[in-house]
Length: 461
Image (cartoon, rainbow, N blue to C red):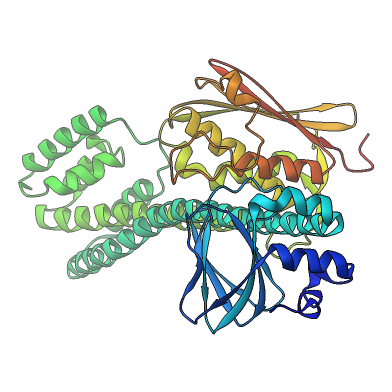
């Protein structure tokens, strides 16, 4: 038999009048649950509220696609609560040790609200806490999912230049051996100062050439002309050299001077060294380009996360947008054109910078998905009185009117199962409101625009 004192030790029942406690005990059913047995199962009809009096229990199930384990101890209240819309239990509850619980049927909730209004109010507060915790879990899962997608894209973006630099470094070893061997061959010959000067002049000119690389057709023509020239001087196996020199836009007539002042074997050694030096310059350019790209991406990541910076600061909106576009480049470069229309005067917002980047990420990512990965995104900034306005638009199919009224609701999504949690735009709206701003959307086929108003930092005139 349940004593009133036992129920009064439960936080939500603490301090309630004795007659109300007695009434509740009279309506509820005491249950003794053996360790390992279930109090209720996931997906069963949500038909009762349970108050744990003794023992240890555990709730297990899946909330928002995430497996959860929730320990329950004496004093905890679980199951369905008054005013809840729950139709089926989202988790199951199992006794870890022998336990005693009170089971109150949901069908009697109207009587509980009438007889015990203070308890009903406390249970509503408990339900609100549950909703906040569930929302927090969903938001955390959404952030982790977004982080996972960004990480995968960045890994790909970093891998490409890293692989190119590694490949160029490997090739560089072979080319340096060619230079060493050719230099030894030239050193074994008694070259005049004029001959040495001509070799060095051509080598320097070709290595330092900064001409724009020719198109594929021009390269093909040059390769044939250089190969023909080499063959005319008895060099029939230097076709690869002809291809390398053609890519550097070397003109055939520039090589004639070597054959004019050198014998065939010496001219061959000189050509090998010159071509190898040209290749070294090309490989060094590739390594520099790849490592610069890696450095730029790492810098963008630091800017995006505001690593090593104070959380709250004046943020340049254009810089924030550009950092986000850099981070999302892996999704943009396969068919999305970005048009920029930025106000030239810097517009600063006092902000948690990483949170604003989350706003731009969600809006741009949604635009890319809406267009199916191909189309045009327009990013615009301008000043409106004491606010900066950021407009992100796409030329996708648009948002239908029946969907538009729900897009900022938590957990609402038009994406397929497993593709979206419905927290992206809810998160955007919360962050914008946190910054004392507002967000508006207009949409028609071919023109969907999200406009974010944010107050300018103090001191901007």
